[in-house]
Image 1 (cartoon, rainbow, N blue to C red):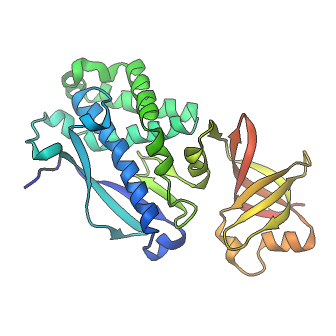
Image 2: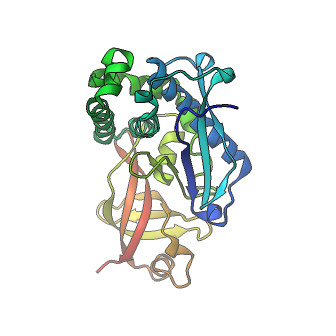
Image 3: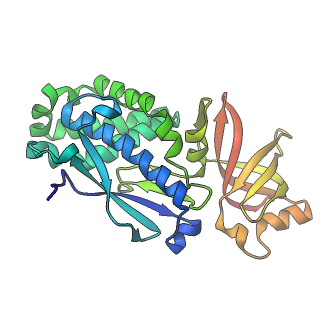
Length: 287
């Protein structure tokens, strides 16, 4: 009987088809495979102290049966080839939260959210400092070295570029978003984050902001739209992720039909520090 190294980590998909407990099979497979590849590397960092190449991973994640809650998938860590896990309780007791927080730091770094990535690394550092037995037993205390943790996260991002592109495979297509681990410790990958993770050229996710726009065109089926920013006169690509778009006589189609301006709350993606896409969360008619 295989022994789990620590409690399962939940991957929760919500929105769109996931609200009916469904997700595109091909995209789901790519996403879970990518999460597992990155998680394998993070586990090997925690238990063995370095970022190894995938073929050298001695710990791997396995999937449990899916559950309905949106669509919830649990993954569990096991020693490769059924080897007996002989690790100090000081490590296994904090492994789940460490892996989830390390995932958070990795995703934030990949999204070019530098301050949020730094905060996630601070959380990892605080975990090592507070858990004295853990920090003294793990790899000569290197987990207490913030610079080492920063380098570790950068290495994980660098070695997992392909997996990071695959991780959000169903997001924006058959699901609206995915949550890795607990919301208090792991990252949420929404449609703006998915665009940036999939990109081959450097991109980033900007801060949520308010924009006054006119709607130049919108596809009600998927939310894709063209928006004209009143302040600059620039027309940009957009995606309305507000569920209100699906309702009758909604503010978006009303504004389009009547040529009225909207005040939208949106999360931008950035390329070369310039706005790429606006992901609209909410809107009201502009005064």
